[in-house]
Length: 120
Image (tube, rainbow, N blue to C red; front, side, top):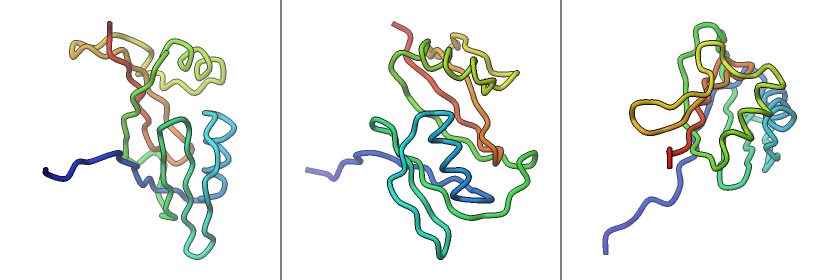
């Protein structure tokens, strides 16, 4: 039997790893898994999703890093993110031609988080 891939965890750049982890906890409901201080590296998780952060100086306006997170009940997540003013102005919730309902958020480092759910 060939090996199988189980999960994928993006490693995103963070100017301040601890501050970034706090942002994900407060804004998106993630929980801290661990934080190393030297070199700065941390992990947050929520449900089955895990995101790693590595200390890397990045100008948020010039950052082109992105990750896609598949969700269940995207409407509820969208409502929460919209109430906090997190939804990217060019990426409100909409059904895409490829059969996904999606919206996007940009974190404090300029990392794009695209959330999607298959259209039934």
